[in-house]
Image (cartoon, rainbow, N blue to C red; front, side):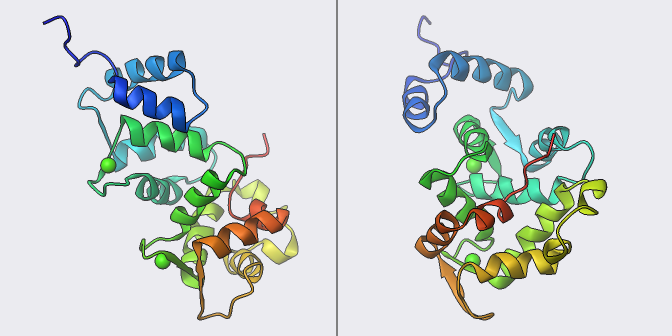
Length: 192
Ligand SMILES: [Ca+2]
Ligand SMILES: [Ca+2]
């Protein structure tokens, strides 16, 4: 019984996460312990994920955004996040502009997972982002992005596409890499 795996993170997952995130082995092992305590089943449901996410945004409604984030990280579409999917989620949603994060941002916006982003998908995610912004901050937004429609229009323009065209992953990443404003608009950074 010396090599029971139930208590510890598997070597395979550990190596994979060390390779794909900046987290150290100590951090990963610690999180795994916490994860097992909070989720004895080893799986996080969408509802649990929403509850965790909401704690980061106490002054606004993070539910819709959390649903999209959950969808983008449930890579095997089984309706739950396992430890690996969960840690990758934590890693990707922290700030930054690496290609991998932009690839993730693309998958966040590609709501129907068909490999392209449409204007209506941009509007859908802009709506979710908008709900993350506390109301006192919403009042201070620039005139050309103070509604969901305006924010979506402004972001869409960076991709140089017609209303009914669609944006491929490479075009999305290029558009965001080339424009600081686009990078700002695809996410919400709490001001405090
Ligand atoms: Ca999953
Ligand atoms: Ca799509």
